[in-house]
Length: 115
Length: 110
Image (cartoon, rainbow over all chains, first blue to last red; front, side):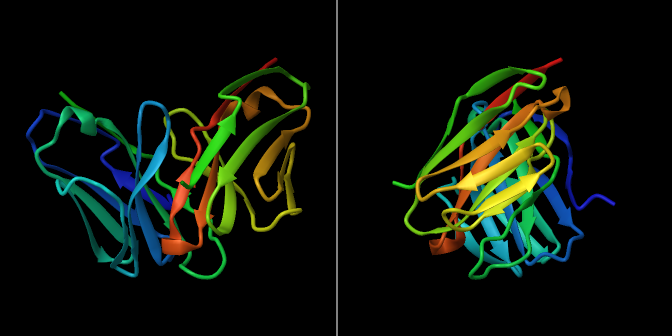
């Protein structure tokens, strides 16, 4: 069974459209994340949820809105897509927030291309 | 400003030729330093977590070490299947933030 899954794997759309990416983890983790990986391979954190509560919200345009219906799911909705939104988006999960650092487990990524 | 810098950007080795990858970091309060491996078209795969200076972790041909300012990923007698991009990340105490480096792309030739 896939630990962290994302759908779709590829997403090609036109500027101005609205799209969603879904993420599910079956690891029983409390914390989930969205990352954006640009063409230079930098992974930059966008959002983090802990038990359905938003805990990290980086400087991301308001067009991006995460939603966590339960702690196993974290979806990303993007409104009015722009060319600069083209990137690979990764979902990740980790066991918990706490005093120790916890490793993250990543999904396979969603390659978004905006034309 | 908190940041993570990895070097070199790319490394080509012959099979069996040992080497090291560097990750230098500046962060206000380190909670953990993580190494990941990323294959083309896939998500990063967790390798190691290091928490304090002097700590070392090993897995097969890989060994990660940590000082107060940098971490090294030593690769001993690499094989072609070790070819991948290796990413370093640090987690800061405040706000649970993670900062990733841009990675070292390793190519091991048979």
